[in-house]
Length: 254
Ligand SMILES: NC(=O)c1ccc[n+]([C@@H]2O[C@H](COP(=O)([O-])OP(=O)(O)OC[C@H]3O[C@@H](n4cnc5c(N)ncnc54)[C@H](OP(=O)(O)O)[C@@H]3O)[C@@H](O)[C@H]2O)c1
Image (cartoon, rainbow, N blue to C red; front, side, top):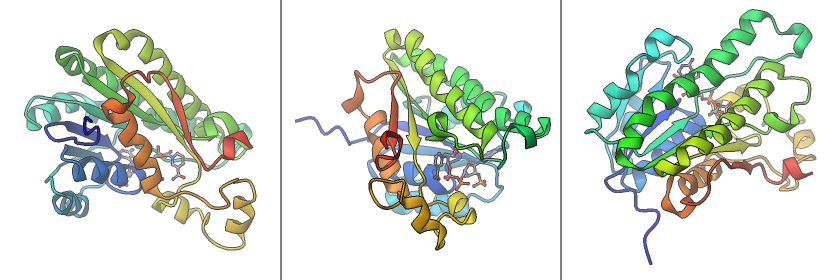
C-alpha cells in the first residue's frame, strides 16, 4: 500500500509557522520528509529552524508582517525559488484575535483582523496558484476556527473573518479542482498554544468551565490539528475539496 504520509521531495510553506499550531504542522511535515519554509512576524526564527533540523529536514525562515501588503509582495515566488522551484503545500495559518463584540470593535481592529485573517490568505494563495497550476498539483489549507460557526459574542471581527476564510476555501476549491489543487479549511476548537495559554484558557477555574462544552472533556493539543493537516496535505485526501474539517473534540456538534 502507498505510504501516504511520506512527504519526501515535497515542499511546504507554513504562514505563521514559528509557534503554536503552525509550528506543530511545520514539524509534522518535516518529520515526514518535506522541506518546510516558515513565515512569521518575529525577526528571530532560530528556535523553529533548530527544531526542523532536529525533525530531519532543515527549514527556511522568512520574517514578514503579513498584514502589510508591501511585505507580502513577491514573497511566495522568492520562497519557491529558495525551495528549489516546487510548491506542494501552502498553509495559511497566521492569526490573532481581538476581544469584543461589534459595539467595541473599532475600525482599526476590524481592518487589522481583515488584513491578517483574510487579505493575507487571499494574497498568498493567489501568489501560490501559478506554481501549483504549472505542477498540476497543490494543497492549500486555511486555518479557520470554530468561531466561524459559533462565535459567542466575544470575538466579533475574528468570527467574521474566520467564516470568510472557510468560505474562501470552498470558493477556491470550485475553480482550482480541475488543476488537481485542493483547498480545504480546518476549524480547530480551543487548542493549547501560546495564544490560548496567554488568554488563560488552561487556568482553573476557567479550564473546568470551558471543558463542560467539550464532549471530549478536555481541550486540544497542537499535534491533533497537525494530524488533520497531514491528512489534507497528503494524497489520502485527493478527493476532499472545499471541506471545513472541525478539530474540536465534538464542540461544534454539541
Ligand atoms: N489555538 C487555538 O485554540 C485556535 C483555535 C482556532 C483557530 N486558531 C487559529 O490557528 C492559527 C494559529 O493560532 P495559534 O493558537 O497557534 O496562535 P499563536 O500561538 O499566537 O501563533 C500565531 C503564529 O502566527 C504568526 N502571526 C501572527 N500575526 C502575524 C502577522 N501579522 N504576520 C506574520 N505572522 C503572524 C505568529 O508569528 P510570531 O511567532 O512571529 O509571533 C505565530 O507564529 C490562528 O489563525 C488562529 O486564529 C487557533
